[in-house]
Image (cartoon, rainbow, N blue to C red; front, side, top):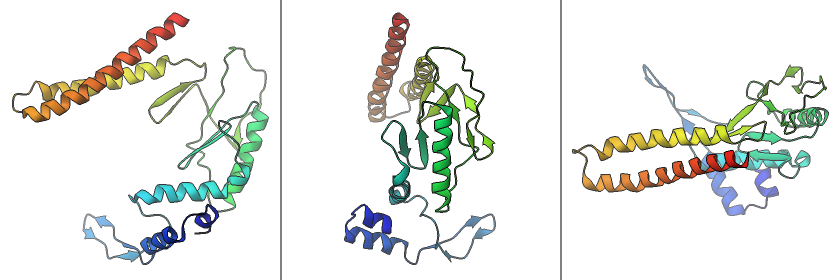
Length: 217
């Protein structure tokens, strides 16, 4: 709870959080039935809304001494985004983060770490240096998907817009099956129409954005 105290969280909230975790019991459901209850002394409650805030706050406090201003360093839950102008700089920052996390029992996931290099001038780089986490070479990608958005290394947005249009049409097809069904109550159809009109607006907006981007080119 030192992290809460450092962030000046009210003592009343700290006591309430302690009461939630004190004496916590759980069981595991198996094919043969549920196991006996056993105590939880390490980790967070799965499914508890407070767990996300608790983890983010602790991670923010433990890494505060190596964090930089956005967008060079951004945190979202257990995901970290680091930006650097040179590969040497990025390797140094990755090393600092790995050492800082390992000092408190955390580890960077090598299999989930990816590296993307923005090349707006489209010039080939002569550097042969690899971006690494320890001895592991991080794979370089040209597209990165996060929270439903696609980021491209050339700065274009066509892949992201096309993806949003496809998702919008799939949602619209699902709603259409409800609207055309005579067995569905009228009130449910009215709520579906409100939702579908919003989806169609999103589709039209993304199409317009795609056309505008092509005009700029």
